Length: 206
Ligand code: IMP
Image (cartoon, rainbow, N blue to C red; front, side):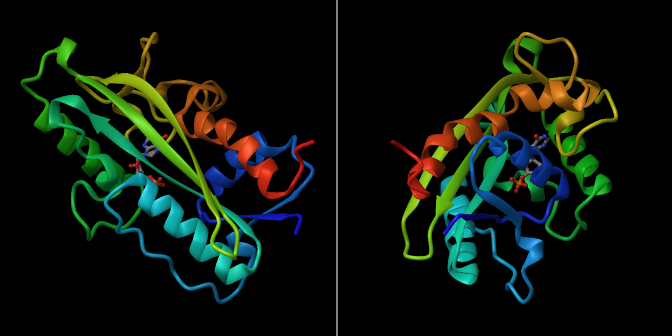
């Protein structure tokens, strides 16, 4: 096996992941290249549960090594919420996209309306899981520390980007060029930490 299947249908994530894994001598294909793969549920209690479940289900369905990620925003003043429920924080029924993203960050801003600057610390966390069809799973993690702004700013990115200001910066993720965000993001960090794990699956280590 020399093929890694990415268990994501998000084209932005596919590009970001391909870019970071470019140095590996393996073929990378998105799950959208396969027909008749059943929808994979994301209802675990942790990022690890969700990432491992998605990677394993994809590896078993395709017969190849698979990589999945799960991520979210942890706000200290909300004791780690929205966390694993980041995508559905404002409700289960809103369709994926800009409107749901706005509803999610508006809810977060309203919960934090009386929280002062020093208490607005937060982090994006991402867990990457790699699995093979026989049940082997390895995981890596990446974190990006920062704080929650008082008002949304910037029109790039997705999700909570307009209200997240990474540590050491004054602009939100949404107000930065995509490549600047990608270089420091939780996903980039988790993927870089996953490089030796992927090499182990494909026995590229000498
Ligand atoms: P998932 O890993 O695609 O399931 O992401 C879960 C949710 O976390 C997304 O729907 C976003 O709301 C949020 N999220 C994850 N990564 C980011 C990011 O880089 N920027 C903004 N929001 C993010």
